[in-house]
Amino acid sequence: MSSLDYAKEMDQKDPLKDYKSKFSVQENIYYMDGNSLGLCSVDAKDSLIDVLNEWSNEGIKIWGSRGGKFYNYPQFLGEKMSKLINARPEEVVAMGSITSNLHQLLATFYHPTKTKYKILVDELNFPSDIYAVKSILELKGQNLEDSLKVIKSHDGKFLDEQDIIDAMDDDVAIALLPSVLYRSAQVLDMDTITAAAHKRGVIIGWDLAHGIGAIPYDFSKSEPDFAVWCTYKYLNGGPGSTAGLYVNRRHFGKSVGLKGWFGCTPEKQFVMSHNFCGAEDARAFLQGTHSMLAMAPLEGSLDMFLEAGMDKLREKSLLLTDFLVKLIEEKLLSLGFTVGSPLEHKNRGGHIALEHDDAYQISIAMRKEGVIPDFRDPNVIRLAPVAFYVGFEDVYRVVEIIEKIAKEGKYKEAKSDELVY
Ligand SMILES: *Cc1c(COP(=O)(O)O)cnc(C)c1O
Image (cartoon, rainbow, N blue to C red; front, side, top):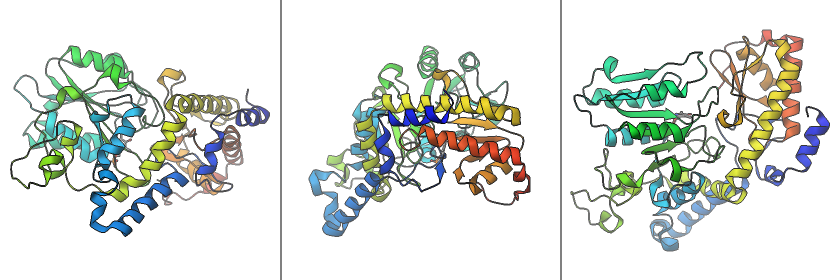
């Protein structure tokens, strides 16, 4: 179960094995950082070139060509993304970034009253999400100390779902939570937490940054109020590719917080009226002219997800992280490493947090040996064996390299002023 032979056999019978050749995987490089920036694929390149050619050939007519495909690109890509989370197509658009989409959604949904005014977050969430929440609280003149309710972690790694539910008191207006914690890869139970929020009249939004493309979601079951995600991590849309925004249809028609002309109903957009007439669906949240070039690679990439299927991708991802954990347990625990990710499948996202007191220097040494991990302060090396382009033998080699680095101890010479993303 932890031998090189096992790895080779698993690669042999992997139903997704042919996808690897579509990605720009460099020779002798083990890319374990797809949870930060997914790799480029031939398909992503092709769809980008297609948009460049269309612009080149059509000029301004690109807005109307192919039946308005590119004018409708936010919706066109939104429909593809809706399939990854089993939402309705009209509930999803491609737009902005996680951060800007959160600003948009908080500006739309946060209407504090004297008794219901708190925003519930957790202390392990990504900073930008918290900055967005603090911004809206400041804009609305709220006292930050009082209005920001922060769920604490007991161990600095994981959240207790019951703590989250217990914190949803009557004074909580909105809860914003990560579906997968970016450091430990803990998966939160979206269905249960969302149901609890709704029972208590709390608007709930999810950040799927570390979940979408790694884990299948069923929004038709959980029906949260809103969600955001980026597309450059597991979705392989390219650096800074356009993000995703979901708004449940029960909120269609609500006054949008930060309006722009692309949020107009298409029939009215070019009437150029100063009275905003919002689209009837998630398109109402769109703002300015969308960046087709930042969206185009996503088209080719998303089609690969729809072809391969999220269930298959998740199945392989779990087998890969199982294998990784097993190898860590066998070869690395005795060298001062620990596993900082949940072991149960239902609680585990797409990466494994490998902890070590010298994680930073080890991560630098790994890069020198051809393994690309990422490092998260203070002691975590994140390893993401992405199902599309990482195989079982790759995982085996990665652990072998880490073992060698730790045993030799040379990593201690690694300079600490080197830049690690
Ligand atoms: C990656 C990530 C972000 C990044 O936000 P951008 O606006 O896309 O730069 C925000 N939140 C979480 C939870 C993330 O994992």
